[in-house]
Length: 225
Ligand code: ADP
Ligand code: MG
Image 1 (cartoon, rainbow, N blue to C red):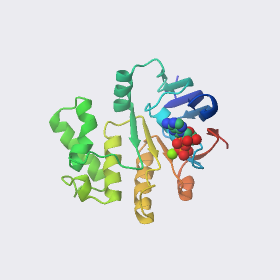
Image 2 (image 1 turned 90 degrees about the horizontal axis):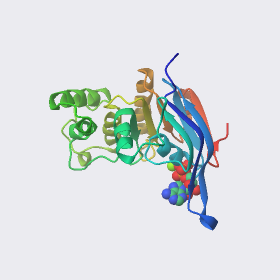
Image 3 (image 1 turned 30 degrees about the vertical axis):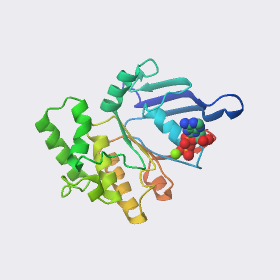
Image 4 (image 1 turned 180 degrees about the vertical axis):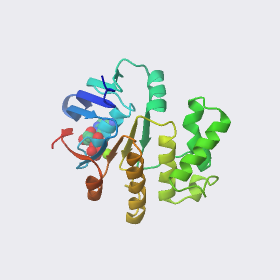
């Protein structure tokens, strides 16, 4: 038997609020992500893209439905186990980089390895390597406020891949970047996928659709295409 899919969502619902204010952010969503996939998620604002990504990233729990991550059900896991799972199996890149301001690029990238108990010397070596990989080898010791938006997002990508996640998720990673920087950052996702990384990326850039293997068009909390 082959490896299970990286991620399998089955009949996922996410409901916010109750009664008159109830919002069904994700509506009976089923989705399978296979190893090596490169999926682009598109759709209007409010169509449930971020809610679905947060569920895939175990940052949020569905109201109902099942989620298998590498064949393992996640719904029974407590918060601590979920945190470990996120650290080991998932990488997440956000529109607003979410770097720690008082840490250098290198230290930001090392952080997930500290939680994973990687020895200091190996941390430094791997973080340096990852920053070179995203083209930031010359900025190892700069803090986020000494870096451009595109450079900060590269640090965030290096941080997201540093524990070699099974699934790399990115929610509008170029939403805060100018068009030239957007191309550079999208190029990194292409390269990562080319190297075998499984990628799910929310974007409004239509040329991503051409690069990605498949486009998922969200409408009203589910995939419309
Ligand atoms: P998208 O990322 O496609 O713009 P979202 O997943 O952010 O869409 O939102 C989907 C729907 O769920 C929207 O109607 C949004 O207002 C609602 N929503 C998202 N998060 C919350 C929340 N924390 N509380 C209440 N409603 C929410
Ligand atoms: Mg969103």
